[in-house]
Image 1 (tube, rainbow, N blue to C red):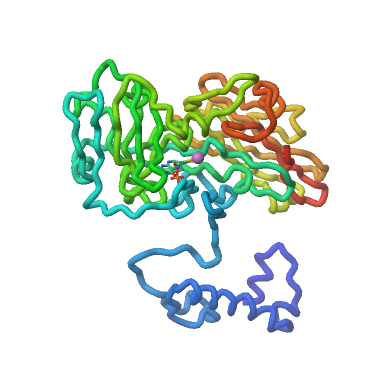
Image 2: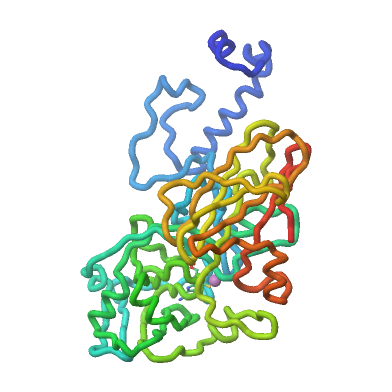
Length: 411
Ligand SMILES: Nc1nc2c(c(=O)[nH]1)N[C@H]1C(S)=C(S)[C@@H](COP(=O)(O)O)O[C@H]1N2
Ligand SMILES: [Mo]
């Protein structure tokens, strides 16, 4: 066995290590892994120190679990938790890692008691049970969700999760709101509708009818299963590309109207100054991107590095992602993972040969409206404000140090 290892391995392993001269060191990782499986509650059928090809492992189980060697975790605060973007290889966020933002916690809702009322400027006001909603023709679409306040900066030791973890992507299933509008006979004169949640925050937002008639959904499915309680179980409003706050969870009421309702969430919150005016009703999330590999606290080695990340736009499709490996002096076109979907996280990759010199790597998203992700300076100049607030989508950079350390470049 030692012999064959020697033949295939390009890494020089000392004879002493192979012969077990450091027996303790050789055993330690194995016994640690054994403990990890037990801790994780995964049945272990035999001593894992034995060659795994010589024993039959545990059989199938009711509910799967991650390898105990993988531990992606959300970072919760009292009001939100953030997706570990750096731990994901593609664009679907596992439902248990979807970011959360709750204004008054997660309500417990009995799906058998659940009702959605649609009233106001409609021919016949109606209440829909969850079963009613599920009887309508259903649709499935993959789209991101992003909190309007998604951007943190301030220090070098920040991960993609710390900086931009308030965005996630799911495959959402539900009924088109237009289907329900036709069912209740929503007035052609209506211009706005109010969406109300059934949590203790009674979160309410006004949404243009235009969005309701186009791609708005009442979603009850997430990545193929029922939507998670944290995401709005049993049903939420899903407005592709619109700021997270408008995607009302645990939705219980829609009132059709011909004017906006001026709720707290659209007047005192989710508004921001632009020059000397206050900007309200900022629905769409602007195009942005972030490199998720390499990122803090990873380290890189000289040679080929596949720079990876995600780009998205609330206004349409990502057309181009540009990557700079020389601190923004020149830009290269990254490869986009197909299919590129509308209003969806899009994975990008760019192959780079690092020569070991200190530099900065950046990414910049361009969407099909021609919009180019701005620099922080452009953004701050256009707003006439400081960093912070809502809808801040600047190009972000990672510093690559000579020793391979990767650090965020705080704004
Ligand atoms: N009813 C209700 N809907 C809500 C919220 C809430 O607190 N209550 N939070 C909003 C905010 S600010 C965001 S960013 C998104 C977060 O959705 P998620 O928790 O599924 O990621 O839901 C929105 N919808
Ligand atoms: Mo949010």
